[in-house]
Structures are given as C-alpha cells and as structure tokens.
Image 1 (cartoon, helix red, strand yellow):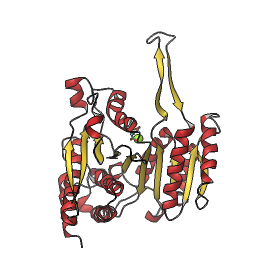
Image 2 (cartoon, protein in one colour):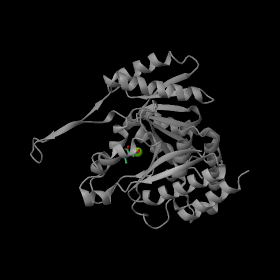
Image 3 (cartoon, helix red, strand yellow):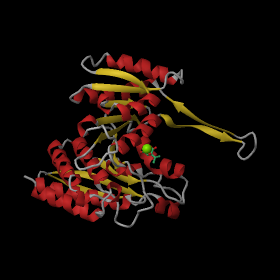
Image 4 (tube, protein in one colour):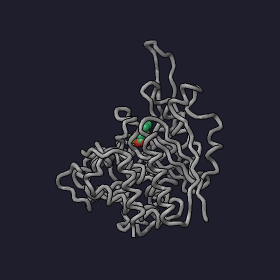
Amino acid sequence: MKTYKIACIPGDGIGKEVIPAGQTVLAALAQKLGSFKFEFTSFDWGGDYYRQHGVMMPADGLNDLRNKDALLFGSAGDPHIPDHITLWGLRLKICQGFDQYANVRPTRILPGIDAPLKRCRPEDLNWVIVRENSEGEYAGVGGRAHQGHPIEVATDVSILTRAGVERIMRFAFKLAQSRPRKFLTVVTKSNAQRHAMVMWDEIALQISKEFPDVKWDKELVDAMTARMVNKPASIDTVVATNLHADVLSDLAAALAGSLGIAPTGNIDPERRYPSMFEPIHGSAFDIMGKGLANPVGTFWSCVMLLEHLGEPAAAALLMRVIESVTADPSLHTGDLGGSARTEQVTAATCARIAAAA
Ligand code: IPM
Ligand code: MG
C-alpha cells in the first residue's frame, strides 16, 4: 500500500489546533478508502521554538522536510516577536528554500455560507488566484542605513525576472486551461510601474500564444478590487504578483464568506521539492487555545494536498464532505456566526467520511 510521508508544522496560534484536526481527517480518509496511508511527522517550529533557540526553525531544517511527499503548515506569527522575523524565519524560508513559486488560492462560496455580497449568487464566485510566490515585492531585496538618524533610508525593491514571470504565467495559463471556462485575468499595474510591470504584461502576451484555447484579459490591480465586488461572475482564474495577490486573496476570501475557510497551496510545479498546504487565516491569537478555530480552511487545504499527491478520488470525497459540513449551521464556528467548536467540526467531518457512500 502506498504510504505518503507528510510533515506537519502547526507553527503558532490556532495552527496548533487546526493542523492536528487536519491530520485526524486525513487519517479518517485513508482508513475509509484503504488504498493509501499517511505517515505524519510533526515539527515544533515557530514562536516557542524561537524563544528557546533564537531561531524559528533549525538552520538545516529544510533537510528534514526534503524527502516528504507534502507539508501541512498552520501559521507563523507571535504577538511578542516581530512579524518579519516569524515570516522570514519559517514560512518564507520553506517557500523560498523549496522554490514553491506558485501559490494557488481557490475561492468559492461553499454551501451554507452567508457571503456579504447581496447580488452575488454562489455560482457567480468560483475563482482561483495564482500568486507569484518567489519574487516581486517579497524578493527580500533592500536595506536600511543610518538607522534612527534624520537621514535614515530604507528600501524594499520589487524584483521581477523574465524566468520568474514566464514560469508563473505558464502555470496560470495551464491552470486556466484545465478549468471549464478557460479564462485568465492577468492583474497588473503597468500604468504606474513602468519597468517590471510592463515586462510582466509583455510576457503574459508572449505566453498566451502557447495557449490559443485560453481567453484572457488584463486588469489594473485597483480596478480589479472593484471588479471582484461588482462583477464577480466576470472572473475565473487570476494571476498576480506576490503582493497584489496577497491583497486580492484576502478580499476574495472575505467575499466568499470567511477567512476561516480559505485554503492555499505553495506549489513547486516541477516537483523538485515537496509542496506546502496551509489555511490562509493566520495565527488568530485572540481565539487561540480555546477550541474555537475553524478547521475547514485546513480541511480544504488537505483537499489540495490530496490533489497534488495524485489522489483525486480522495480529494473529491473530502470536498463533498466539507460542503455537507458547511451546509449544516450547527457546525459553524464563530467566524461564520455559529458556536461550534473545532473538535465538533472535526468529529462530524470524520463521521461523514466514514458514512460516505
Ligand atoms: C498570506 C499572509 C502572509 C503573506 C503574511 C502572514 C505575511 O498574509 O499568506 O497571504 O503576506 O504572505
Ligand atoms: Mg495575505
């Protein structure tokens, strides 16, 4: 029987609650289907590890992950440690170390979810945002000098490379091609940013020629926010730079009803390294340790993990169960206006997997 080796990195805050819930659900799926199993290894990296060791994860930590089939990540963030340290010391270290250059963020209004847009029917909002995940505004290039003096200077330089843009465009066009509407929107800001974003547009046009069956259009990022609200049905697959997609994906998740259910995959499409799957909600310190976190974002991330492993039947079964869970208001956690607890949602999900036809 096939055994998938999964590294679990709960990280901080509610990551410590939702990742074990995700493991429970994956194990229930494996038991139900009987055709594969999981071998989980957990890593206690994050804020507490930082307080003990002065680093978020060991310097050679990537070596412990390299031979895994996939990574399941909770969140990184700690109220007592600067955000740039928690982010660069753990999540970005893994994303960049394993060149997971495609960040994929599906958004849908799941059954039973009360989404905020009055005129948007659930079938009008079925998007996948592809976020460039290795360079752009998150390249980490820049510096500070003369700190604390009036002449202090600081820069964050956004870097786009031809190789980096070509590969994310190719990935996005291919993903758009695999979806029924075969439609891609390329988000840009080439009116104001006249170098890198102009190259971004040129490369989009160049790569589009490889995909003659994919229709595509271009939208400025500011106009894109309005289009997401006013004309959600005009959008299917979206590709944007690292920071643009960071912002758009929070808006997308909110329009779909809750950050608590939104999943993401940090993908190495060439499969040189393991890919990493995570809920996008972050550490949510206000509710941590109380059993109130919504585990659905992690479960949906597990669907993406299963698809990536090449287990489409298991992925489809889990997605069906998730939709039956969100359709049941008694299983809504606080972020959805309900009072269900993490363990209730997890137990109900496992029970429905076991009972599935
Ligand atoms: C996300 C998050 C992160 C990001 C934060 C935690 C730094 O907002 O995954 O979208 O900006 O990449
Ligand atoms: Mg974000």
